[in-house]
Image (tube, rainbow, N blue to C red; front, top):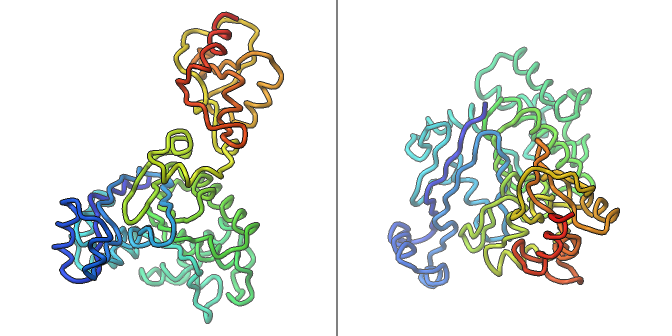
Length: 362
């Protein structure tokens, strides 16, 4: 079972008197005030927990602090203030030697630009972390080959990096991270250098691997669609601060502020939302056989629209025991698309109540 990661009030300040700068930030100073004094606050008061087996995505524009935050999680950068705990161990309290040991055995990193050794074969690149650990050659080659097979590279073990496509090189980087059997994977813009089709394929690969391996993953990206596709939860960063943490549905339906709302305005909601995000939950109870079309809370939005198109009334949403947990009026499906047809309709909007009551009476 993977381990829990905790970040507690992390700050990273570059420049003169960083400790003093953190105190100023805690008292309400902003990033621009510090910059005027020649100090850069890269990360400000970041706190979150990543549960075992969770894919936690940190998303933000260039300069938002996301990559700096990632490098504090494995000790490549020392926090100016705050703590990082993994598997019950405070990483910020470790010596350099102890940190190297943790990185060698518990934490692996997948880089944006592959970081492969050109003079090593695919197998030897995948086995590099095991070599650092002192694993005997036969054992590390076996484990490297297993990891390469998991990443779709069986048969490519003896090739050289310059004989591979960009997507294949990134698969080698992922295999190298998996071969060490580390509990925590840190992925810094790992797919952003790839062409769109290859990038989509790598996202599919990661989703499939995660279903099988259930690693604890922190994935950095500037791409909101990638974040929503991969993340169990997403942290949105702006100017060094985390401004919202939630599921893709949380962020789409309940953006924390105008900045997040502007970020999500071009997202195809139909690819992200499910029935649970758009249903009216005020009507509950045992299902009555009213002849309604039904859905489950996890029913995808597109499928929900297809169900709704077959009927003239709302769709009943049922739990695993066939109990009524909510209803979805047809007009709400239109409202939640949030494009030229209008802004998303809040779940407690009065204009939905007529449709919900009609289903209750049906």
